[in-house]
Image 1 (cartoon, rainbow, N blue to C red):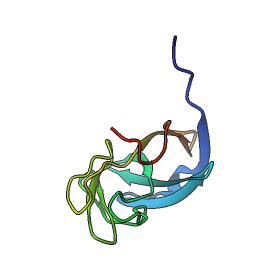
Image 2 (cartoon, rainbow, N blue to C red):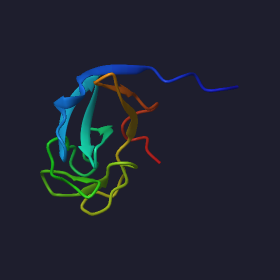
Image 3 (spheres, rainbow, N blue to C red):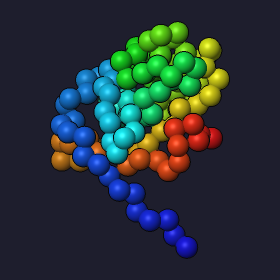
Length: 115
C-alpha cells in the first residue's frame, strides 16, 4: 500500500524569507520555522526541544539554526540537535518553492515525535 501524496499548504511569497534568516508561520495549529540557508528553504517545528522557545528568529549559519534563548543548535535539513542544552531533534517538514510561493507539507505525528 502506498502512502498518500503530501498535502502542501501555501505560506506566501518566497521572497518573504531572506537568506540566513527564519520566519515563523502557523499551519493547521502547528508552529513552523521556515528558514533559508544556502539558497534552500527548510521547515522545522518552531519549538526548541530544550526550553520550548521559538527558534524561527534564531541565528542561522552553516546549515544550522540556534535557539535564541540558550543557543542550542539544530541541523536545518534533519532537525538533529547539534549542541546542548538541547538533546532532542526538531521535527522537519517537506518544503518547496513553486511559482514564487513557499509551500509546506506537514510531517505526521506530534512535534515531539522525531527520529
